[in-house]
Image (cartoon, rainbow, N blue to C red; front, side, top):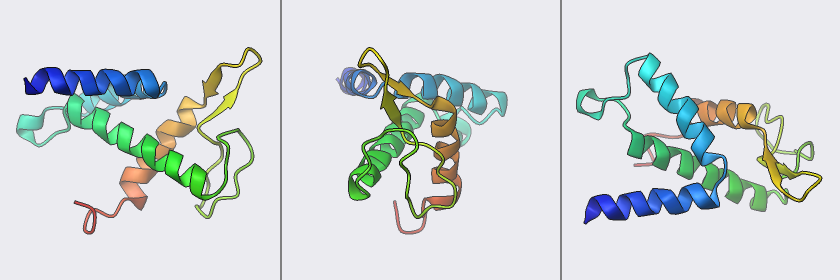
Length: 121
C-alpha cells in the first residue's frame, strides 16, 4: 500500500542521511510550537517535512559536488552570503559528525530566502 511505501522510503532516507532524524525532531517541535504542523489546516505534516529536509540535504550534496567541497568544516568558498560550515566532517574514529545547528539555520535560509516558489513547483 501507499503508506507502507512511504514509510519504507523515509526509513531508507533516515539510514542514508544521518542529519535527517535530528532535524526532523527539531523542526517538528518548531512547527508544533507555532501550531503550523497540521496539514488539514494548511500546515506542514511529518511526511512533507521529512521530504523537505531530504530535498534540502540533497540540494546541499549537489552544491558540494558542484563547488568541489568534500563536506569538511571550514573549506567553504561558496557564493552565498554566510555559509559558515559544511554538512559534516570525519571524526577521529572515522564516523561523520554533523553541525546540526548550522544545518538548521541553512534549512531556514534555503526555504525562507533562497528557494524560488514561483519557478519550483
